[in-house]
Image 1 (cartoon, rainbow over the protein chains, first blue to last red):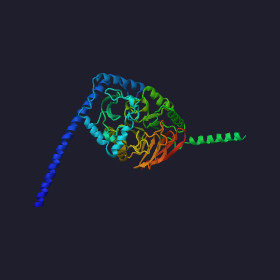
Image 2: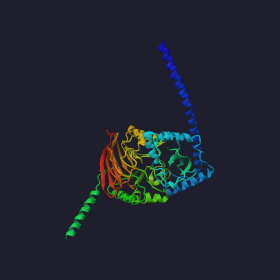
Image 3: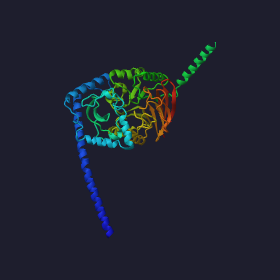
Image 4: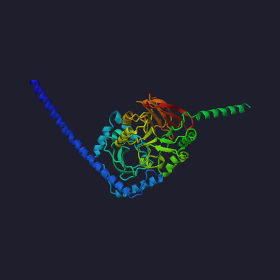
Length: 195
Length: 285
């Protein structure tokens, strides 16, 4: 009897602990999802703008020459810059979302596999393998075509919010940028996200 | 008289050497799938042009119909003049003869510039698949940005392929003895299970500026051919991975799939054969 009672109270205590822990965990997870949703909504809105501006340009076929591709990219970049002339850092990487990105990235760069991921981001990183002075991390700045692009560790990408094809995450030095892959523009950035 | 004899001997030796270096070791069977592999080629310098000249030369012996590109197709700028200097000019005799190039993307390549470029036959995509003949299918991946969408696509396409030969190629090698880069371990953790699940036969990569044939890993054959322009001399470390390695000169590969066999020959910028062999299809009946 004594043992049964002890067992019962033990189970109750364990259940309460689990519930309390779960409640404590649920709230930040929900908050994180909310913040990432806001980020994803901003990205979606940006891509909608990009698409609507691209529609005003002559259609770029899937198979074309280098001059047509280059002209299309420059024209689209000019349209986006004009439409987002008042864009500011943090418009898309909102202040609330920035610490989340930093936390995820830093957690992904810990341990043995983390070191391998960190090494991956250095490959093609324009501040390390390109011409460091040749690229400026600014909203609406051009990502020059003569600069390499950092390889994104696939394990990290799976932990970040998914992006539509029109934009990608890249590292420039220690900064994380959101790059418009059609117009080669820096859409937004977070400073010093890597350890 | 002595000098004359010396000259004759030297002349004969040169002829013999040339005959040896030009020896085709591939079966060259009718109806086979014949192709070449180049990687990290887009420098626009003399090494790229010399290697391209050899690639062109060998086509008279081995009429390959397409070329796989392992990425870093364009170092430095990607303006129209760069496409001309780093691709159109060096390979013009091939493109004019109807040889198709199928590019994958490296970390020096701008996906948007290159996927729509007509010379690279990417169909407007970062990653894509094509089948030159029934039974043989190629999968070009973008290893710089292996996101969830691409992984799902790869799983679906490999599963639906039904081809006897499934050949994947992309920039970063899953296994490498390179001192500069080494194996792409993070990438390997995600794509290798798919390769095993869907019985991929052969994988080609670049990124490392040398040639390396890796000992089969979990039943899959891996090749690195990342020196058709760039070269990193002496970069191959001594590891248990290497079946054959060469880092003294630029090179390219010629390959042939005929039935259940894939034959390969690796040739340097100087025309010397540094590796060759035959792979029997792993899952053949």
